[in-house]
Length: 383
Image (cartoon, helix red, strand yellow):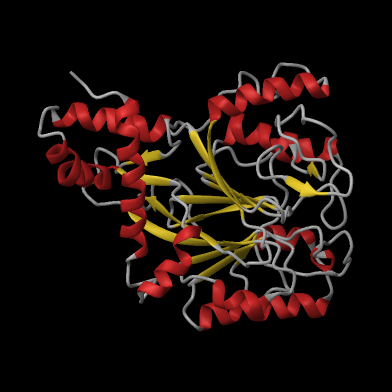
């Protein structure tokens, strides 16, 4: 006898609340209840370690069910509920490792547009700050310098240890095509930008690996203004995205995922893409970015910005996104075959869900963050 997923779903949701509280109560990052309450709605679960699940089952579920289920049976069904119903991946240490998983707290910003003064008090403490572009309004040198000062202040005041940034379409003077005094090859190879000396890693269609374990890929490309790429060029660039990236940073969102932007004249009637009515909204996301993410890269987290009207996060299974894409290909008259051979990722993973996080700031300046668990030195390359 085993419990079904529908009966376990409320307990899986309770687990998420319990797990979030466990993470928020870490005094290393938040020293007061007031601080925890302020940041709690923005904490994003991207995956959970098996050890937390085992503790929850032992402490809460076995007594609740009066030990009527065997522990292993209950654990298997509970994990399946988390993965299939709530789209949460589960991570474990490798079988030959005796060490527990480590974690880093990532704080994600995007589209801050020179709002450093209002933004700073809303930024929670973390290990690494990711910024997904559009830190300026007009892309001027003065605005870039202002943002660089924020990065330095974050590290100086202990809000983070490391900053990783990409640019966005507003950050014009960061683009070597528009600022010819920049050396694009040097920026690419060094993962540094001369205009942002307080940015520890600046990514522009390349990646880095942290602790020999977490690969982060970053790309600024958008359809217009700075770092613009037409559809054909963007398609080719997404094809070159590292297939083993764990965290992907882009400025543009993937198509039909938190990409609904306010426009004066949107879709009339029910949208054929999302089946919603949004007369003042238009999908600004990139179809080929999403195609690369769900067919080949399959990251744990995809962070982006650009669209201020749908900030937040969602979790999707790759299977459901592929089904949606088949429908969208018919709408756009795109051949049904995918553009990565048989569509099999080079990454060996049982993680079939992706967390998508739109970090673009709205008027409330909400800042999202997540804990990423990993086994150090689990990848070949080192930086």
